[in-house]
Length: 447
Image 1 (cartoon, rainbow, N blue to C red):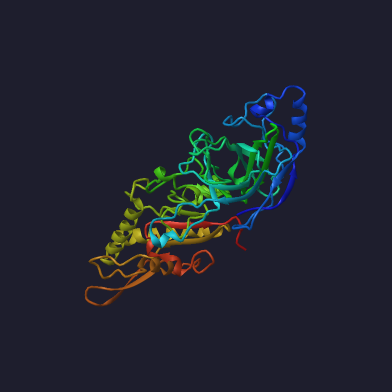
Image 2: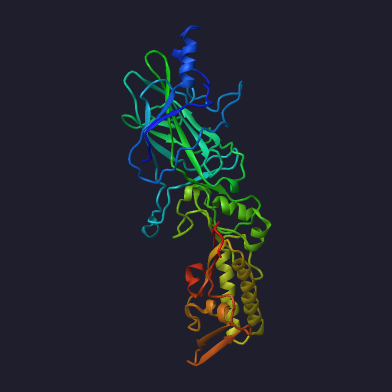
C-alpha cells in the first residue's frame, strides 16, 4: 500500500460542475461554496508501503479543461479535485497483479510495475485496476472518483496526460469504479473501448507514469469535499513503432506481444536500430504479461529473426525461424558429405551472422544476446549439442562419422575474434534459441 499523511492545498484548480445539491443553493450560498472549493485542503492519509512509493507529483497546471470545454469525463455530476473542510481521505492505493503464466516454470517470472499505453484512439485488451482505500466521514456522500494519468518522468512537472476514469461508484463497476466493501474501491486505470487513449506524446520521452486518484463528495450542507492521492510510479509500455517487419505468431487476442519500454521504442524508431535487427517477434506482453519466457518482462528484450536467412525461407511466414534452422542443418549435412555448395552455404551463414552480431556488439545499448547452439539431429549421430555454436565461434566442428572416425568440418574462416565479451559468450549459445536471436537493450550504455 502507498500512503503519506497530511493535507495538500488546492492550487490552480477549478470545478467543472458542482453537485446537484450545491447547484440548488441559490446565489447567496454559491460564492461561499466556490471559496470552499478553491481554498480548502486536500487530505492525504496513508499506511505502510507494500511497494516503493514515489513522492506525490506536483499539481499539473496543464491538462485541465479550458473554459467552455467539455469535461474529459461526464460520467459523474461532481466538482474536480477541490475539497471542502472535511476528513474525507484516500488512505491507501495498491496496484493489482498482472495474471501469471499458467505454466509453473514461467509463473514466477512476473512484473506488476509495467502498464501498457495504447496508441491514440485504441484501447487495452486487458484492464488494470487500483485498489483504493479511503476514509469517509459521517454525513458525506461519495459522488465521484476521478483518476488522472500523470507523466512522472523526472523533471516532467507531473503533467496530466489524460483523465482515464471519472465516474460515480457502483456495485458492478460498469463505468470503471466499483465498490468492493466498506471504504474500498476498485478503479480502472487503463483504456477501454468507451474511453480510448487520447495520449499524444513521444514514447521515448515518457519514462515514468503515475496515477492521481481524486475522491469527490458532498456533505449534508451541500458543500463539495474532496481528497486526492498519487500512486507510486509505474513504467509505461508502448506498442512497437509502426512499419517494422514481424515474424512468428501474434498474440493479439491476449493483448499483443510487441510492447516496448520507452527506451526500446526510441531505439527501434531510429534508423540505426532498425538496420541492426531483422524481423521482430516477441518483445513484451501487454502490461508485461509473461508470454512464455524467463525474460521479456520490461519491454527491453527482443526476439528477432536469424541474422542470416537461407534462400527460399519466407521470414514472414509462421514457423519461419524453425525452417531457417532446418536449412542450416541440411546445409551442414551436405558439407559433411563433401558437397561444396553445402559448405559454401554454411560458410556464408557463419560470416554473415558474425558480421551482424558484431554490429550489435558495437552498439553499447545492447547488453545481452542469445543465439543458436545447435542440437542433436535424430538419425544423424554426427550432430551433437553445440555444433552450430562451434562453427560460428571457432569456424570448425569436430564430429564422429559412421565409421567411428573423428572428422572435422572446417569453414576456413578461423576463430571469431568478437566472442567472450560482455554481450555474448560461449554459454549464451543455447538450444532454446536455435530458431531465433535474442537481444536485450538497456538505456544505460555499456562502458
